[in-house]
Every structure is written in structure tokens, then in C-alpha cells.
Length: 66
Image (cartoon, rainbow, N blue to C red; front, side):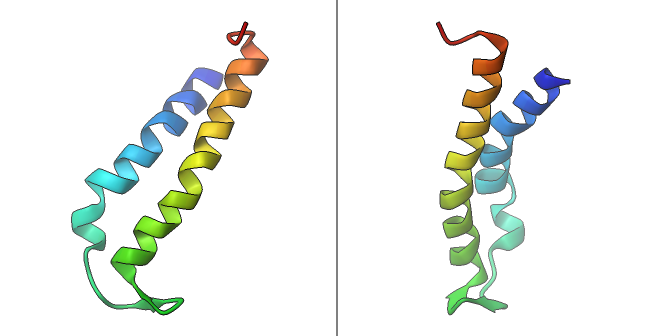
């Protein structure tokens, strides 16, 4: 179970920032005064460290950080 979550946390930022860009590359809607494309990239600038922290916590609980 933890390996599945770990794999998702590793792949999620790459998929969201690279593979999904052609689908979010649009101006509308405007979110917080930003075009949707810029909002999407800014959102993942915030979420990527959270994914990294989740990876760290999973590795720490498995005893992989020694």
C-alpha cells in the first residue's frame, strides 16, 4: 500500500506539470487574477514540496533514511 502511495507522490508533480500542460493551456477562466495556465503552474509550485514532504515521511516510516 505504501509503495503505491509513494509511486503516486513521485509521479504526480511530473504528470501535472508536463503531461497535462497541453490540456490546461488556456487563458480562461481567470483564477485569482491569473490566466488558468499560470494559476496551474503556480499551484504546482506549492503542491510539489508537499508531495516531497509526503515522500520523506513515507521513507522515514519505512526506515529508509539512516
